[in-house]
Image (cartoon, rainbow, N blue to C red):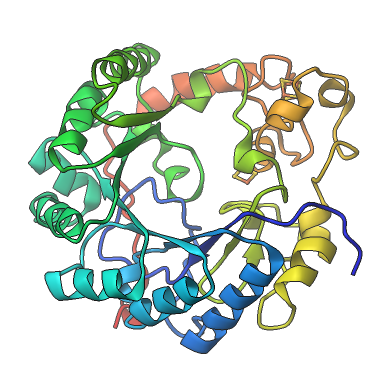
Length: 367
Ligand code: SF4
Ligand code: FES
């Protein structure tokens, strides 16, 4: 085996794309993978065993809604037996006291619970699920009662931007030790909903300022991880900490991806854990090697002092906005496509009042 990169430290397992919620900013692909063909329990166990052997330290059990998998405790127990740190990323729908106890017994280390808003009616509308807000309050209590460290995930957009600070207060009230509060990233379902989700520049800036103010106010009470909005920035994020550098995603049916949106880069082929070992995929697959290091970069990024900090930004965003996955991320002010962001912001204001396209798995796959 040719060693072309350091081993990964994290693996995000999309155990299923099934989910009772329909959040319009879901990062899952528009072509959701149905229940038929999901990796079996034994296949997931093999993936996690290979991950541990490869050097992975943390696994993020995600979806869709991972609680939709009836074998979740068995999967957690297997990961714990391998010494992997397990993080459950959940909407909370499907959690109950018995399951929380079973997950604690199985060795689950940490829970991330999503919230949609600090206002109940708005939260349920964003989730596309009546009663979601109330259920999440119950679930947070179950999680903290079992002694799990709790992180609350909150996503800021047009409908809740004025309540960014209130969402931080809500995270404290739910007993979270940490809150990840991020502006919508325009991948997956957020792309067809961009007009409905994009806040005005003034609203986005006010939300950023409010979160920063609260972050200082709440220092010592809760840790606030704040991800600022891409489209209003001058410098890009270090997406995935660099392509094929630290983490990988596995889809419900076993495709190994360098990031959740990688399938939008259509010229790449993604190897499947059913056919290849995780080590082969990580070190040898053309897709994981496509944007590693700096050789693929254009002159602008290759000669830039930030190239080892942001790794040229996001490949999927470069493709979506510049038409070339190897281009400088248009969020960067040095990109010749940077002005495109202002055009998008202006045009998106025109579709702001349209209804959401809710994310839904085809009904026959939900059983
Ligand atoms: Fe990052 Fe490339 Fe912009 Fe430099 S030119 S800041 S490496 S995206
Ligand atoms: Fe694919 Fe950023 S989402 S590289």
